[in-house]
Image (tube, rainbow, N blue to C red; front, side):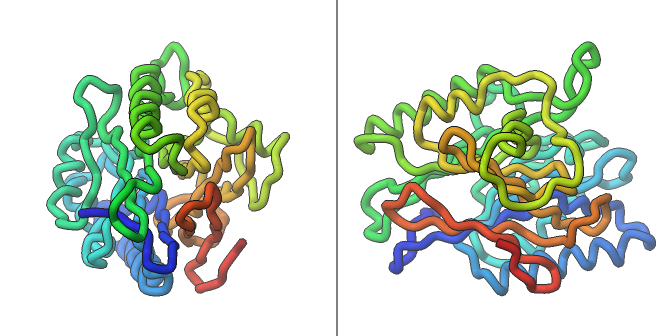
Length: 299
């Protein structure tokens, strides 16, 4: 299934994050139903060319049948008929289910573009998708998807980080793509746990949006952001994880953006919604906004 810019030179992505679909218990059904309604409404309104899920699609810890929860979570996305892809969050596979099993469920959908990625890499779901121009002849943009992990070793504490082998894989992919394209292609990166630089951009960069909680990044900075700066292709990084942060800021030429929390069955004071990203062919730039559950747009 090829991704390509539309005839008008645009390509639109909708990012849903932290849906946190529950166990199907009575007290959760209303909240999960509202999450499903939000997903359907945003897709119908924005009619994106690609849907990206940036992790924590479900609660899995202590859940009797996390596979069933996962199927409920992705059902409205799969039913849309629009190409979609996902990365895992820290909650998706912390219960009695593996990332490999959840990936297999994703791939039951004919429009799912998620891949396992190289077996030797840390995590599950490190992969790249490329997009063609309007003519369909040449690659015009790229999307990187990285598994940002779950919990760090007890000696470190906190959350996991993107590991050196994943960074090496990214730089290799970026370099080969640049060589065959005559230079770095405009690219976006999707992860769940924000990079440490998300805190720095809030303090130093030009920022739009809200910050109501600490940036829950890893305590270890493994150098992913530095690698992206050096490769010169990634224009924007899109994370989830922090339900009460939705800001987007620019640091060293890269936009660091949070999605808007999409699930009603979890903490957070922000109105539920989704981030929309619009690329334009030949431009190293994108527009982005948030569409809320009440149909309001936040730019």
